[in-house]
Image (cartoon, rainbow over all chains, first blue to last red; front, side, top):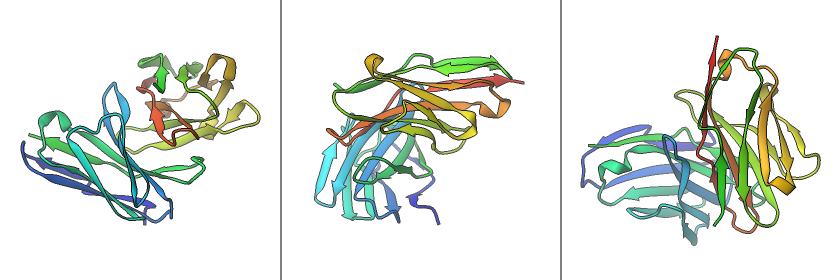
Amino acid sequence: DADVTQTPRNRITKTGKRIMLECSQTKGHDRMYWYRQDPGLGLRLIYYSFDVKDINKGEISDGYSVSRQAQAKFSLSLESAIPNQTALYFCATSDRGYYGYTFGSGTRLTVV
Amino acid sequence: AQSVSQHNHHVILSEAASLELGCNYSYGGTVNLFWYVQYPGQHLQLLLKYFSGDPLVKGIKGFEAEFIKSKFSFNLRKPSVQWSDTAEYFCAVTSSNTGKLIFGQGTTLQVKP
């Protein structure tokens, strides 16, 4: 099994719909992150969490929310999806020293 | 604000050519530096990383990078590229002050056989 698992792998949704992307990890890491990848823009940080009770906004948090249900689970929600949220979304985890980051395989989201 | 800049957005090389991809960052304090590669249709893979010590870091698949603190740079190099190196390459930086891993915009490398 993968260390960081993202579900779903692919999703097509309609404008205005609420959608949740899920991430779970078996690394035992405290820190978890959500990024989105767009061509020419690299990966941009949406939200990050240093533990279950510590959630922080990243560079581009508008239109997104997150939930850290447990140390191993970190979900990203789009409350009302819009087409410019079409992107590849990655979840990642890190250890406390920021020496090792582990990425999930990504969720390709298309908003039509 | 913290930022990472990759100078080359799209690089086209022939096989056996040498590669150097630029990366500069703006951070204060101690940083950890990374290069990731993303092959077409795949997720990110770590090429190499620098935390401390020898500023010349060797990674997988013949890649290396040099940390030059005075220039805030961490350029990626490979003496002789192969067609299989065709991919997107990302420089990323984190600092103990922030705990956030920030990426550059990425460089698409196309190697012609």
